[in-house]
Image 1 (tube, helix red, strand yellow):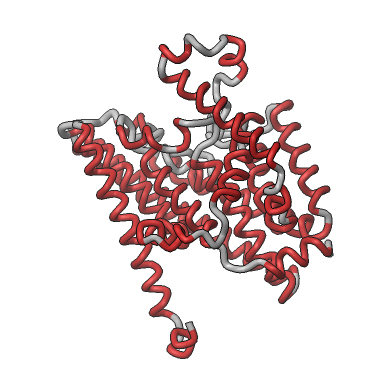
Image 2 (cartoon, one colour):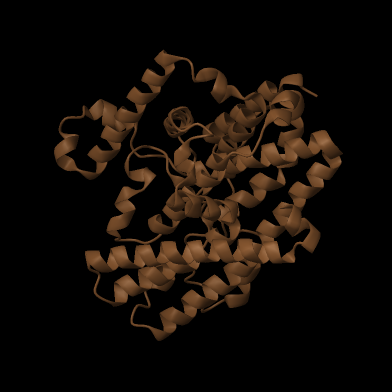
Length: 379
């Protein structure tokens, strides 16, 4: 076992920033899934190349490497691998339940409401003619209803993470190099996971695995803390973030595009989300590097009440994500069937945030009640 990885994992203590970023990612994904909503102009994707999905995948990789890496040290690799597979099963079970209820709800609403076009908008147009076929293909991840793509992605990434963790615990740099090689090969040869009968996943798992492995690599090597002292690197990262913001804003605001050379704008357009463009990875790493430098683990702002609510949503990220899928659909339906005013957009967004927080606190409270009395007293 790699001595550096062993020492870093053994020394790691609770870091609220992990759950804060997962909570931010969940809230941002909820907002981004509501079309024609003024509030989603404030999310990460509007100010650079990367977005909430990048944040989500990276932090899950970091967190899983920490939790199960420490488990490897205490109880061995076999136990840690079985716990990861248990998480995969929970993800898949959540996906199946969500898939069935979600497409049934959309089909029912489309047939009963004045907006039947949503059945095509949410990529389930075949459910009315061939419901059983759609359900079976959904079970093998060959259907992709709108907004379930990120949960689909996490299933294969988590399924292969025991192998990744085994490599990170022994040869972290070689494991990262293998991940980069797979990423490059997938982009060059066009490897991806296909939908039936045609089409591709929104997130190519052969490419997006790189972010999850990067998260695990940073966790076991402790690289960010060693790089924080490099002032030139902070300046370079900041300059790249400014460039990314300018190019992203220029895409949506023609007057600004006039000040950006066509060669520069063309080099970063389109923003290849499916295959995780290299400049997108670089943008996320620059953002994560500066964020961890500016907000250390003991920053007093992490105790603020509002951030505590976001942190709770990160701690219960799976339940919050699943509820957010339904809430974003409900919010979209409200906005397309009623007065789509700015005030209404803000109102449904704030109500959605409140509902997500309520779900997170309820799930946390429910888990607490399931603990034996002795365990509750020790906590």
